[in-house]
Image (cartoon, rainbow, N blue to C red; front, side, top):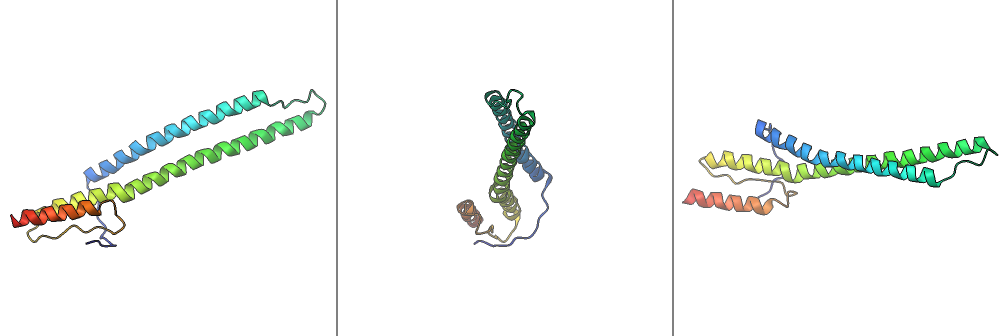
Length: 150
């Protein structure tokens, strides 16, 4: 009993609070990871700067300056790419978690609440793509049917 499309529904204040809480809980580790990653990149930069000799003892100062600027530009590019990758990974995980777990659970809870008070029993309908929750919905529908018969 799965449907591909569902009607748009406004979230209640409690549901919005749950989603805001999930955002905070998932974004906080992402920002901590970005800060730690940036610290590691900075420490790596300092280490490489100490180990790499950019001076050529005054023989060719223009070449030494060019090497330093190229090194810093390349390292900055790597650092920015690192931060962007971490951010995109965090956003992807957040989106997947919200779309395939949190939002369907909120919808199931709302529908159980609505349908438990309705006189003719209507089963809960979810998308086929919510594979994780199909067994749960089947069990809830069976329990609600059994409760109506009793």
